[in-house]
Image (cartoon, rainbow, N blue to C red; front, side):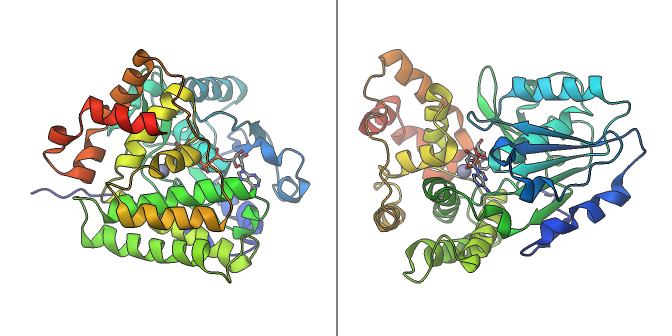
Length: 362
Ligand code: NAD
Ligand code: ZN
């Protein structure tokens, strides 16, 4: 048996207001006056001077605001990389991603593609990246995906939605400042928070589970229950925001050494065909997975009720057989997820008909 030797984020700051230390963290990392820092920032912060005024731009440093209406695409990464190469005198000193999972993934992918030839789609998969990425920093502004800590950057490519999983993907530095999450809209808080909850349920109920993953998964699940079920917790509590930030971190660590499962496999299908975003897509799917995760789904329904969340219904009602086939192909291609969820013989029970019947309920 050969065990995987995973890299982890080597530096992390945690604390309310720690974003103020960004400039001093970056200063020693500047390679030269012609090698700028490029900030990729969710455009929800475009007119938010409370955030942008705290970023000191020197020499050719640049802020690029990015819309997150759609999840990151390989072509979007290629375009950003091309622009950066054309507009900078030297290879940047670093890429700083400020936003949710979408922006964090873009920042990781851009930093990889600045030092690796070809197109981002060529690197979707496992361990295809050859050269170390440039220095990259992740600053989450919404909690749940675990993208701040994970070894992957999930991208939609021409043929598949799949991550660039590599030892060079994790951030060199993460700043966990819960204050940045204070204005997240309630529905989105729930959807992205549930991504974390579902990571825990899928990891803890999977056949790949081991003590490493279990220890992180259990802690994350405990925090999720405190945040989403305790009557005393509230979205605007500083403590709840800090707890969700750490739940996200632990949830991400838990799946690093295991895998996600049925909800993620099927939600990737929805996302690929319909563009359904990850957080809400996971919720739509998970709501119908009682047979796989009975306790996890029961608790999910309780949380949904407590926070008055109404999920979209009948999202697959108008789909043609060909469209169902596309979603089923995407879902079935994620073999490790099924093996983790069901076991080595998953192909005996997870048939195309089975998946179609499940999608028809959503
Ligand atoms: P997101 O990044 O798309 O953000 C969701 C919404 O919240 C956006 O409208 C954004 O503008 C808004 N938002 C973010 N911070 C805000 C703030 N502080 N105030 C107000 N609004 C704010 O969503 P997400 O759920 O964080 O991330 C989803 C993405 O993460 C997907 O692309 C998914 O594939 C990816 N993902 C990656 C990993 C990984 O390990 N790399 C894991 C899970 C999910
Ligand atoms: Zn997820």
